[in-house]
Length: 288
Image 1 (tube, one colour):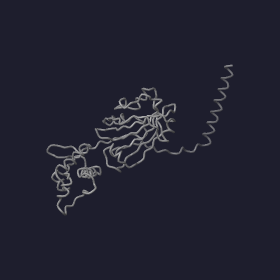
Image 2: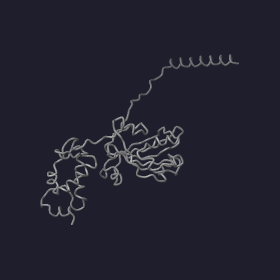
Image 3: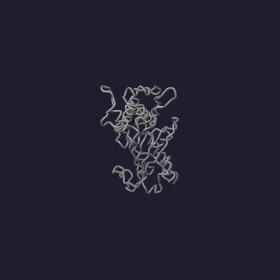
Image 4: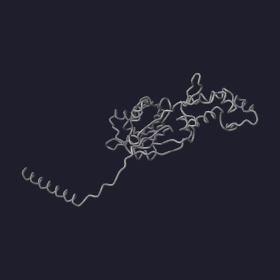
């Protein structure tokens, strides 16, 4: 019998606990997820102290080792700090800010806020993109690149990108590790100019939750789009899932319909046009 099963069997009858002893998964993971949810929902604000280990033991009816496993999991996620004399304190979760209108330059945007992004490449492999990617890149001969972006050691974005192999035949995981993809494109002679993007809210599946160290079904922001160069060549087709601590900045402008142009103004412009045409005709005759 496991330690957690023994604890469940020895629990006093009548103890009220939010944990599921039958099919809810390891007890320490359940406690971690409960505290994680309280932190994300701001029930526990940054700088506030978590209950002591003894208080968490009484609250959940588990041993200290289970509580410590749960707190260790929160610490690994960057959600709490273990401080001598204060116990566990809720950390200030870093927020990634990016501009919807700006194509690429995520590292520069983070640097402008005094932050540093780190990139870990999961895989680079030949793979045909979905039909939308084929239409955007006009080829099926592509690399599929999967990466995770980290902010202060906290995973904030999972990126799945397809790029044409004919343009970038030498891409490898080693080359892309902690590197800017757009900068590498420029090094290969292709200069990204931009392209259409869209943002939508989605729920994380188990794979995304694992990649971003969040709970399954947590809300994410999905950015999809294509980047082209000035000649219209499709350089990348991408999907980027952003963790809940991402803020998209939008520079919204109020547009107004132009005022009605008066007939007098139109008449003056027509006269000016006729005068310019007459002078151009005189110049042409003089040139001959």
